Image (cartoon, rainbow, N blue to C red):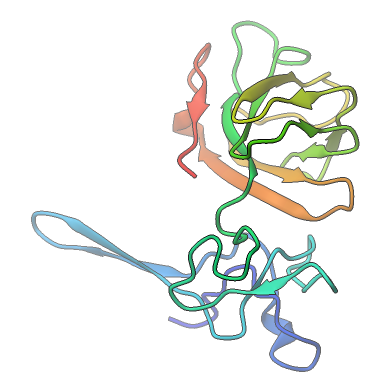
Length: 187
């Protein structure tokens, strides 16, 4: 396989043509009695990246082999403190104004989500205001219908902090969009 890059974050003139988002790299092997997934990362990979897959100066960090949270005193980008927990992408009846994204918090501190945004697969954002995410808790955000909209045919949901940095992203397939049911994302 070739060009199987994840959000790359390569530096300028160092394979930066391979930078991109949602181009996860991996192989899924099917054996007679089970599947095995192999997911790749490259030595030059950094997270988080901007919407084009490029490093964000002063924010992006190198993904170290075998890294775990706390290796550098920071939370590792692969384990976001604020994340997308669940989503109701196909509510009963008409969708506008009824779709819900549940955001979770793994920290011991409440997080003011003012200025954060939920971005759909078409890069349309729903900017949050007046939402307080409790310590160790979660909060349901009802989308207005005028910003981000969640497709019943599958899509992505991205959570961006006020600086425009991608904090967490999830994807779902059309088969996940069961009417009246939340999709639970494993993060």
